[in-house]
Image (cartoon, rainbow, N blue to C red; front, side, top):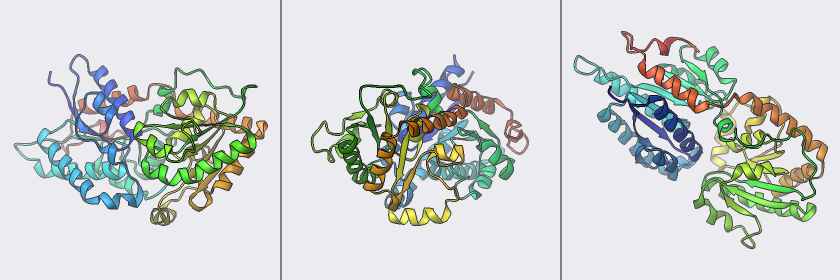
Length: 403
C-alpha cells in the first residue's frame, strides 16, 4: 500500500503547534503505513517529522506589516506551489494563516486544473484547518473557498452554521478547539475563586509575535507596575517562545520584576487572579481556566485604519465573540493606555464578586468548545476525504456532502 503524501503549511506559533498535533494523529491513524509529510512551518512541525521547506513561523507578521516582506512571501508562495506540483501530494492542509494559505490553495487548484489531461489526473484534496475569520471581515472569502477547497475543519461552534448559510457547497466540520486537548488533563478550574491567603497574581500575556510585544509592552508594563503598587499583587509574564525573552527583559527594572518565564502557561493560569492579555487564542486559554481577564490589542496605524473599515464584529476578544457580549473588557488601539488598563485590572483585583461573575461566564464559554479529541476528529476527516473516490468533475462525494 502506497503511503499518502501530505503537504501541510502553518505560519505562526499557534498554527505550528496545532499542525504538529494533527500530524501525530494522522500518523497514528494511518498505521502501519504512515503518510509522508512535507511543507512549511515551525519547530513543532519539524519535531513531528515534517520535511520543512521554509520555517515560516520565524517570519510571522500580521496586517500591513506583511508589505515589508511581500517579495519574500511571494517567493515562498511560488516555491511551495512549484514544490507541490513536483511532489504531487494527495492532500494539502493549510493550518490557520489564512492570508497565505488561501492564496496557496488557489494557486494549487489552478495549477492542478492546468495539468489535467490524459497523462495527469493529479487533483490534491485541499483542506483548511481553522477557519479564516470571514465572519468578522471580508465574507466573500467564503465563496472563494467553495471553489478551491474540499474541506474546512472548524474549531469554533458557530462557524458551520455561518458557512451553511453563505457558502453551502463548502463542507465544514466542527472538530472542537485544540486548547481543550492541551489542557484536558489539568485539574478542573474552580467555578468560584477559592479563598487564598497567598495574595494576588497578575499574569501578563503580551502576545506571540515580536511586533505584538513591541506595541503591547509599553502600555502593559506600566499598567502592571501601577496595579502592583496599589494592590500589592505579584506580576508574572508568560511568553510562548524563548526568542521573545530579550524583548521582554528590555522592559524590566531588574530581572525578577516581571517574573518572566517561557511556557508553563497552564500552571500559571491555574493560580492566576487576573490576566492582562493580548486578544487572540490566549484569551480562550484564560477562559478555559476561568481567569478574569482584561484584553488589549494595538497594531500599526495603517492596519488599524484598514481594519476598522472591514471588521464587522463588535468584539475582538474571542470569549466575547463566542458569548455575544462583553464578558472581558477590551481596550483596542488608542483606548489601550496604561492608566485605562491599570484601572480595569485594579477593578478586578479589588472585587472578588466581580471576578467570580466573570469566571462563571468564561467557564460557560469554555464548555462550548467541544469535547477532547480535536486532532483525532480532524485527522479522521482528512483521511476519509483522502480515501473517497473522485467523481467525474474531480470532486469527491465527500466534498459535496454538505456541512
